[in-house]
Length: 308
Length: 294
Image (tube, rainbow over all chains, first blue to last red; front, side, top):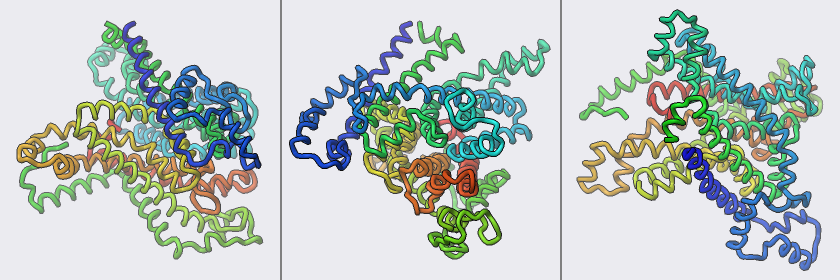
């Protein structure tokens, strides 16, 4: 239990540094926020001054920084320049579609990655291995926006197998594949080397000597022990998932946080950009801590060793 | 890091290099990758000579024409020849990819050597800082940088380089920590060499193979990252024939003119695949451990 607590506390300095960076970066942006907010509409000096006061821009930087950190910790990150809505609410509204897409991509990536990795790892240096690894390499080499467009063209427009618009489950299939292929590539390579290593262990020889079939040996004995490195990679892949969601939402014209981020940057809606980055980093850090805790479930030796 | 035989004479060094090159080409995929990349570079350099049309020349009578003998890859909305545009686009994609990796490598390696060699508190805080930077999803960080610097291809290079820098710094730091403990660094210290001299003359040359492998492994991602930002409308702007920007302008006509998005994407895919194959093979031949650290 102390292990989990200690791991939770490490989140704080990381978020602190990340949010400080975000604050600093956005201070450097050239141009007066009030001008950006007015978006070229004419306004008198008085209106501008009032607006500055309302946004708290007339206060010293240090004060704004402390205020920003305090507000960020409470989840209040101001209002959008463009819509005048609280950015927190805006982000919450759009989080659902992005989470569904990320989950879909993760499932596709993990399933395809494990299948390719096992096939390659069971027969290393054969044509099966070479084929699987070329496919994995193709997965990480495909521009996701391009594969998304191809999927739309082939399965959406030409064959009509999968819908490309709408919010239902079916409309999630093609975007999930788009996000998942990159993850599958990296995952497959790691699963392969993990499986090769696991298959060389003594307990595998024992399992084989007992007369277990190859499928049972791999699935029951090797896979479980081979999953630690790939699960670690999963934590890093969360960042890839978020990036993939940004691009895929754009290609499929889906609503979501990625679409929102690109629009916010193009329209210089700084509070929204700031809030999106703050929430993304928070999500990333928290998910990674959660994955650390997951090790304990996959391999009880770790939790026992660290928890003591 | 392998221990180099002390008096490595010129002929022996050359034969070892030759053996490395031979080993590299034993892999059919790597050979194919090199052929593809050489063709690409040649195509990019001699684009003005090879391209059948001017890449900005519009032809209102030949709009959205499918691929034919006249226009190998078809024409776009303004009747411009896509094959010619792609040849010139190869210049952008390759140059932008190399520039991004070079910038990330120089900055990252400097940071890594500095904190790794200095050690102590600098290393402790520097590493933590790098961890935080690594926590930003690369594309979100790149978009944030573009938000600060503004839209444009040069800014995209800086943005993607910044987002890739922490990985280089971390790997280089690790390599420096190992190198630092070697006897020859200790003897240089004993001889009274300055810190800067030791870093530049003794530590740096020993991490060069790692840097080459890392740089190549990263090049594919850099090309993809910069093309992605251009595709999102944050990088190269039309009429620049950058592949990502071409894909972006082609997507509206996907239903009627799929070749607009087919060929630039295919070129991007083949380029990145070739670069990744090359990186994998280099990693196996030059520095088997670099890949696991990346």
